[in-house]
Length: 162
Image (cartoon, rainbow, N blue to C red; front, side):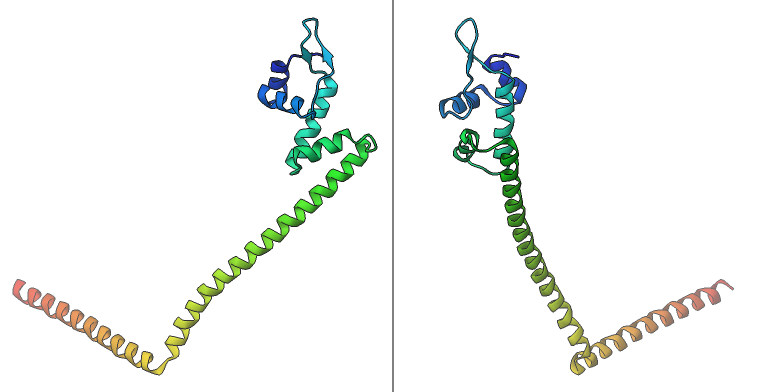
């Protein structure tokens, strides 16, 4: 398989500009030329591009990726183990961030609980209780008066209808 830079960009879901940049910095340099003397990408270039994408997703810089790819001493398996270590490190960082978020959430819940505790304490405050008892008594009296008024009004209407 030999494809031009435009075809390769479409194939891998990248841009020609990105591929040219990778070529410029020596990260992904196609070795083969077509009959017109233009660089063409091969299956090996596709595999290298996939390694670049994986490494970028792991948070490696382009210079770190280049170092990994050019290090002849690292086999594919060793490269995989390095990537696994990087993922583990990133996962630990994410777990630390998640723990901070969880602690912050607890603080917000604690603030809400403090407000609830204030309200509960207020209910046991004798002065507040007396005030509430008075207001409750007035409310009950108002309800009784409304019922009595309603009853007397309906009785008058019944008497008038007879």
